[in-house]
Amino acid sequence: MIRIFLIGYMGAGKTTLGKALARQMKLSYIDTDHFIENRYRKKVSDIFAAEGEGRFREMEHRMLCEVSEIENVVISTGGGLPCFNDNMVIMNNAGTTVYLNVSVGELAARLRASKTVRPVLQNRSGEELTGFIKENLDKRRPFYEQAKICFNAELMYTDYDVKALAKKLELLICNQLNKE
Image (cartoon, rainbow, N blue to C red; front, side):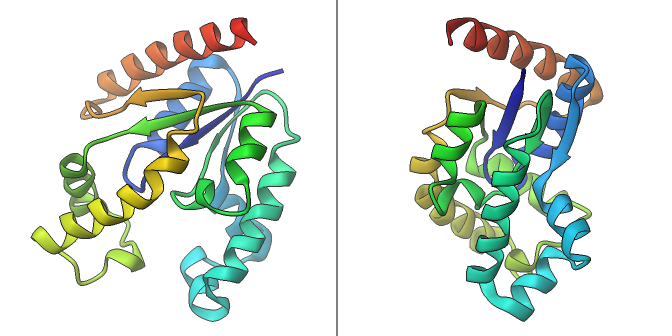
C-alpha cells in the first residue's frame, strides 16, 4: 500500500510533479482542491468568498480524512492544508509526506507566469508579490518541514526536468518506505 502526500506553497509544482510521479509509479492521482470542487460543485475561490476560510478548512479536513483511506495514490494538497487541524499528523500517519521546497524567487516567477489567477495574489506584483510569498512561506514552513521527505523542486522548467525529478523522488520515497 502506497500513499504519498505532496505538500508545499502554491506554485511549488505539486500538481505537475504529482501527476508525473503517479504516472511513473503507476499510481492513482488526486488533487485535493479538485476533489473539493467536484464534491461541492463550487470553485475553491467561491467557497472562500461565500463561506469563509474557516468553513473551507473544515471541508478540506473532512476531505483529507476521506482520501487518507485511499491506497496506491499520489495526493497533491492545497498549499494551506498542512497548516490546519492537525492535518500534518494525519498525513504523516497515513503515508509518506513530501515537502516540495522551492525558493521565494522561483515561486514568485512561477506564480507570475501561471495561467491560473489565484485570488489571494490578485493585484500583487513585483516586490509586493515576493514579500507576500516570503511572509506566508515563513509562516507555513514549520508545518511543511514536518514532512518525512524534504525535496528540492526548484529546477522544473521542461518536461524532461519534471520526469527526472519524478524518478529521483520515486527513489527517495522507496528508500523511505523501506525504512518504515
